Image (cartoon, rainbow, N blue to C red):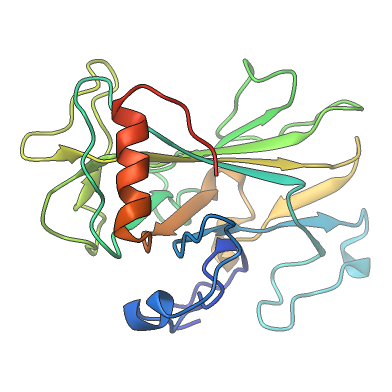
Length: 240
């Protein structure tokens, strides 16, 4: 809680990730990725809730988050290219975020909220402001798209100004920015119809689906990052 996150995240990849892990710690850690990727990928958890809030179990560290944590049944993590230019390698320890964890109340008009919620089989129906009510046999899906234009210099910044989204119409990166592999998460959850659930959030953000967000720190070795770049720029599809 060094930065007072006040909500819990799920993690894939680097096993040393926490509020205090620095670049040296991440570089020397193990990983859950079978290809040896030491990068860390994370997002806020979903909790299943009872109809009567008094029956929900509170998180001892963040008592405003109630319920039982539900891990995704699958987490599809992909990198894509840029519509206009070839991508370049991400620098070591580049930090990339998407969404706004305070986008419902504190930063309501920031324009940074990018939550996407849908149901499997109904992916043409996406909401950024409401939780989906998925029918029997359909999974609840969260989609998190990350920016893919890097300023070519910084690996982090206070307001995420070192990494930007490409223009929605042209696909061009802002002037002075370079296209890097664009990260996407697709998180699928098995939630029975009628089951209450909510996203972990800051106390004042009302567990709003708007606050969904994702984070990434690049700790790929040079060989793996080059493989990602070459696969994207050659128009191939890869898996790991």
